[in-house]
Length: 454
Image (cartoon, rainbow, N blue to C red; front, side):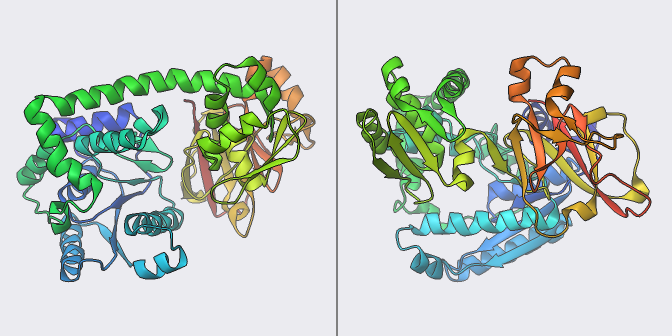
């Protein structure tokens, strides 16, 4: 890894931003989305310079004829120059849109791209997908969502981290990015469609923002200050929403009549409870109107969740999606880093390299054999009657007794997370390790999991 004194200003600022936002960690692969444009080339170059283990990924949608092939060839040249492995995937956008007629070309490309990235995360045991969004992208996204009538979450949607997607270049302007590439002697290509005003983002970039800057110098900086202010307000807002969620939401049931009777902002609260499941604000209004009735049914926009009102209680069905909103159970993939509901770094290593780190239950080691085959891995909160076989013990023990021994308060007990495999508890992150799947004489590889407190 290059010493900090050898880094230029752009690289030092990148390193500081990555560290302050905890976007990446050393020692685990990173998938870098590489289009060949200035942003993605600079992103790959700076991450390599900072010593990260990068794999570049290029999507060829074949939408711009020879220009698409030019982009792909340029990415190959950049990957070779930086000595990075490059993965290329060809996509049939027309076939995707035939299968999903309601999708725009832009949305179809996004779905195809991120599904492939998810596959790469699994295959490479990578910690994150890094994308090259910068300051202007953030301001444009704010304006687009503002014109859609988005709420506070939508207006702050382009964050440094969104699940397994990270944005290390958010502090930089397009000009700073191009200056960095010039200093490094790295070329980039320009998508000719960026000059077209056919897309709303292009109209903002090519016409609206230049006009705003001309009429109100510093408009871009002002927009970004607004985003920062809203992010601070959003943190307070989400904390307040979570407090209300705990009051009215139990598992997959909401005490709707009680919510409507006690809260002046019941529609907003209910929308925040159900928005992750795909319910619209119009549906929320109908639920509020029917809160005292029985028999009303509502289906989420993707059809995966049904909400039913009976005697003032709103019940949700289809646990595969409900758990995401209720915060009760999260399906997780143990082959790459977990970003939500808690942050867990995951690595696969050879037992020959094993060293006991002395980090206690913040780190768990599992025989890699436990991860073979089809298993259901989940993170959830404590349930009455839960038991686990603690590391070093032969018999199971009630989690309530483990919490008591740790002097947990009722609030700490409620917030504790449990990692399960096929409903069997294998770890209390940060509190207690399990005896299940421990390393033994026959172990060849192991999975290392490290819990990071937020």
